Each structure stands twice: as C-alpha cells, then as structure tokens.
Image 1: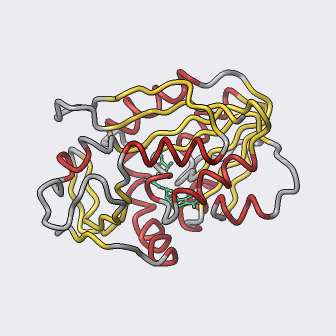
Image 2 (image 1 turned 180 degrees about the horizontal axis):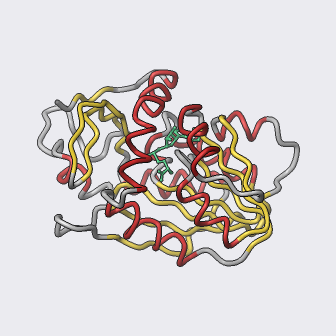
Length: 238
Ligand SMILES: C[S@@+](CC[C@H](N)C(=O)[O-])C[C@H]1O[C@@H](n2cnc3c(N)ncnc32)[C@H](O)[C@@H]1O
C-alpha cells in the first residue's frame, strides 16, 4: 500500500528507520541488496578522493561509511536513527570512525566552523523531511571547496519503479512524502518507510542556494528496471 502525504513528523520517520535497521543491515551485508552494494556504493567511491576528514550524512547502519573510510584519515557517520547507529558501531566500527545518532541539522548547529573535507550521502537527502535544511546543514559542516557526493532516487523514474507515478495525488512538480512498504528487487517487506519525492529542479536549486556548485550528474541503472533508478550528484562547496 502506498500513501502520499503532504508532510510527516520527523520523529515517526526516524522510528521507521529504527525499525527496519536490522533488516537493512542483513539485506546489504548478505549481498541481497544489489543496488546498494553494486550500483550506489561503487559510484560514490569512484568519485571520492583521499581526504583527511570525511562525513557520511545519513549513514544508516554504517556499511558504506566503513567502505568510504578507507579513503580518509578520520570519518564521522551521522544519522538520527539510533538503532541504525547502534548497529553501525557493532558491525562497521574502525578506530578511525565515529558514529553519532544525530540529524545533520542538529549536528551542524553544534559546530562553530566547517571541519570536513568531503561528505557523502547515500539516499538520505530524499529521506529528510526538509530538503533545504538538509543541504544548508551539510554545507555548514563542509570546508570551502569541500566535495559533496549525493545519491538520490531518480526523480523522473523512481515514481514508475516504486509504483506511484499513476497515484491520483502524485504530481511530478510537487514535493510529497511517499509512505510504503520497503522493497528491494529481491525482497518485499511489511515494514513502512518514507521517502520524499522532489522534482529534479528542486534538488538542484536547493543545492545551489545552500552554497554548492554542481560539478557532475550521473544517472545510475540497477538490475531489473531498464530506466535509471538513481542519480548521483557531485558538488563542491563554494
Ligand atoms: C535510505 S536510508 C540510507 C541509509 C544509508 N545511507 C545507506 O546507504 O544504507 C536514509 C537514511 O537517512 C537518514 N536521515 C533522514 N533524515 C536525516 C537527516 N536530517 N540527517 C541525517 N540523516 C538523515 C535516515 O535516518 C536513514 O537512516
């Protein structure tokens, strides 16, 4: 069942990610989630240079934080889902990584100056209840010229893939919360998660007004769906 809603309480969003954390960890570590392991992660890692200080914004259970940390001296993973962060600490810990249960907005308020040389964010901007606040906070913690590598569901094709393009409430040009049972190609679940649909121009204008210059866009295609399912955006903090 898919429900489209105008907004959703951030606490409920975090609870949904808490509830699905163990399953997501199993799906990714077992290799069942082909897109995460073999489409999104390689695309992000390919863009990541060696840096001193890296942050993974919306790190979930830390599987990608750990892989990306091989390219940095120090890494921070932040995510408001405390269940995901607890799993990250157990399953994907390294001495160079610190995991924090926090939203990027709240974390950025506690930072007096930008500290990170690069940030990655895999499918988290589209899970955040306020896109502008998410990008403004991400910019605030990045040093000038810092790299920001973001993946999102492809706004043009994800609604077709996920099955809500023909929903009577769906309008491509409007931002909307999409609540549905979580699925990957090889497994459907009963557990609800929510992502936000935003038209492509909204992602780009939000990044630019937060202080990023967009350097590269890539459309990423996964298995079992012929259109690009994801989009990778590489930006530079201006
Ligand atoms: C689709 S999951 C992706 C998790 C992880 N990046 C991965 O690749 O498995 C989206 C994540 O974004 C996190 N998230 C949502 N809003 C956030 C915010 N404002 N700041 C940081 N993380 C956020 C959620 O808690 C959730 O864990």
